[in-house]
Image (cartoon, rainbow, N blue to C red):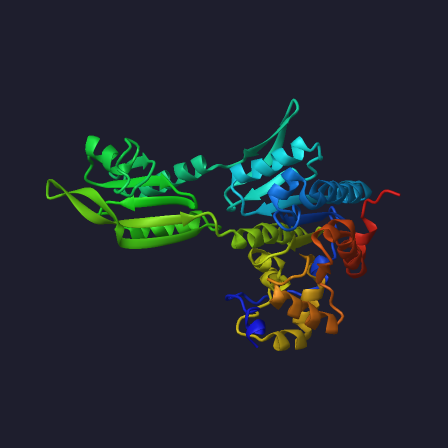
Length: 394
């Protein structure tokens, strides 16, 4: 029962639209977009093992990428892919450099890093591959500053190395920066290993700023903390500098599970709205891929409300079952699925009704040699327009 309860999701709006007919009109049908996890899926080896070629990891990686290359060539312009990863830009660049050093072609050149606001692609200049952000943390900081100023233009904004006053040995830390240029009303922005933190002087309405940040950065986990005792910072109070526990807003880029879901969901929403008869495939191996891999999390796009309904109730409802079957998304669990047990339960229950929405690869390598193509073929059985528009080489 506990496993089934994990399938519940938030409030969704019911629509009177007919689900089965929703995918019938074609504009640019037959294309598949793959969103694949990186570590454990597209790169299923320990990074150090590949560098040192432990357990023949380099040969395995080459073979896996060769199989994926054959698949891309077979489907020509019908199949494209993007990486979704919790790696930072630096960590992703390290992996790209491994591919480059081993002379293994990088077959995917689109990446989603850490949060929905940071996307990147591989840029090739001469013989060097470099990951370049479409939107970086610098852009995120600029947007944060604009939001703060829109609430109160009198707020002075510091950008520092760290806000905590216990790090006062460097000129870049907040206390030293503030004492050189004290301001009564301020916000101090510092980057952390997980994202960005903003410390505020005591007289600022942080709730308004927090509300605006939540609307701006839908894919980032944002928390507000008042009077944080770990951040006792210098502030001007009644004309004097006193040390007061600061109010904080924390933007955490490391909670990437929701971003994976949102990226795939945005792609799927576009397919449904445009009636394009295309397909989304999502693949992953671990708990942070769960939201993206769960097909029930996409049903709101076709007007199905599953709030407070058990899996048994959902599958016995003909309209809901038809929606699950026809919605153009298929999931692939890359490997044993030990951390995705609820999805294995859902897979088994769906298959009792003849609905094949979740595939399980014998190994991550198997995802790219067989399971992606099996998923495409399965959707061909459901959508004839998609099938007739596939661009497949002999």
